[in-house]
Image (cartoon, rainbow, N blue to C red; front, side):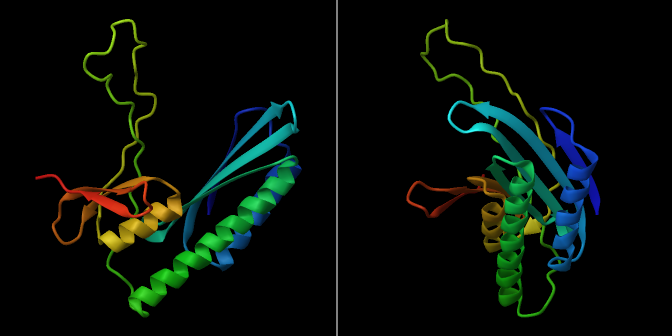
Length: 190
């Protein structure tokens, strides 16, 4: 597993790096084929809680499976423990659903595709003095055909409110989104 650790607020010590690596390597026993792990650390000061450490981990597995977890705690090692437990639960849930659905057969594909929404243009009729909206993040990804059920699962595992994918049946690019009532919507272009 290729491990990348990024810290936005300070330096990560060698013992902290070793602890993070040991915890993430432990996840390999639950899911074979984890190809990379990206860890983002951020420390911030809060008036009521003092110093808070936030950690976000993204795992990429074979066939493009992506799992993401984010936690915060007063101690960085505590945050690492919590995010490791969360990823362990996600892996178990993913494997349960995946294997129950496939009943032991391996699919030809299972590729998550994630995208971030870009800032939308200002609505028509808005005053000219409004601040200019800019795109602050751009993501590129490859589309592989997957079933709608698999797209729902990947969206839930990533914790996103939408998911862009290529529908295996129609071979069209589609957008799956979570509705306010908790159900899902599917946008299919003509």
